[in-house]
Length: 323
Image 1 (cartoon, helix red, strand yellow):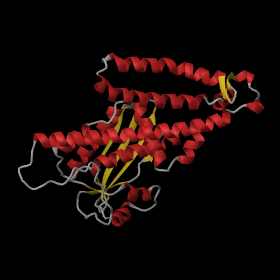
Image 2 (image 1 turned 60 degrees about the vertical axis):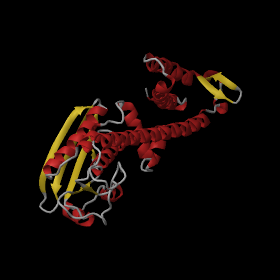
Image 3 (image 1 turned 45 degrees about the vertical axis):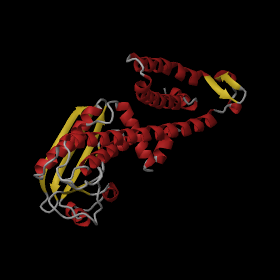
């Protein structure tokens, strides 16, 4: 079994599968964009998806049985080991996958920002301001630094979440949930949320919560842990008064791993924190949190991997996984 796995890696079958999957997702998003412009029938995206799914297995078989050589496509059995260029092809696939993940990340961010602004403009159109004074421009993400934060009862530092999954490679998933939740909380005017850059310095820290809160100038600390197992996800979160070390609120979310559930959990956490701190969320803030950027778990997972890669925190691990 180990020999088969090594041979699959040598022939770049895994890399072809990853590249094919990401390309499929990008093509589906492009189809969704142009379908309205070209007035495509409703069944067109489904047909394209079906064709891409049908082509997945042949693509893997092609990667296994054939090799791209300077002389053209040849059966793998006809290429001697000293003339094989699978390693060079693998490096090209690495670059292709990185580019595709970058495109996926760019689209994901664009779509998320576009929908947020659209929702804000629609809300403003429905409820025009009474005051003639100009309103501040819409800012979908509002994070403040520790230096600018005022110590008040609604100031929060969301510490890096702990990865409790059996696979330590799932750290990117845990960090992604942490980042998304921090971003959601940052959009709520009632909260003062410390920036990601500042809180990430406290990953694996030995300092107590009171010390951390004093350094970040906050009244409350949020801790959490994420565990992914198969098609289930468990998220533990707790909100603590840093001065008294009292638990203001805590919850365990154990649900099926779907994007709808993940974003629902984030919305519920924000609402529960607001209740614990006796703060009020606006209708627009609640509507924005309820707007999930995607309903595709695989696409969301790829987005989290790409974001972690762009942050430079998993570049070595990513390259190791590809090789």
